[in-house]
Length: 98
Image 1 (cartoon, one colour):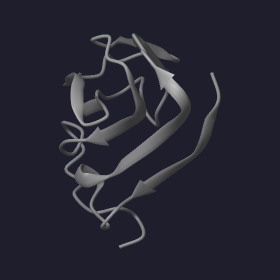
Image 2: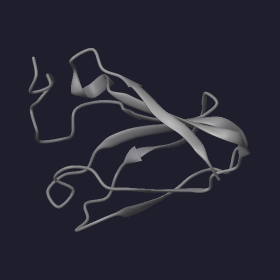
Image 3: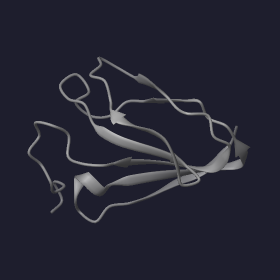
Image 4: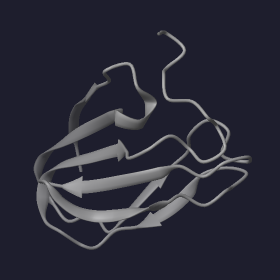
């Protein structure tokens, strides 16, 4: 599967950040493997959509490395990963650039 470079947007708030991947051809992702900062210490509330349909909306597990997130299978061309709130316990609402 090939993809175009990701796009993303952030209004300066961590809880509204998102990134979107566009597949060259329709695909049916059923799992996302991902690693973010400080995964050993915190979970992140994320929402994943395929062409606007929600396929995952939970707190990510704490991990020492990559985590595998099961997705509801949905055919589409756009996969978006979005934070839905600040990570619990961070107390941060603004990015470091603000």
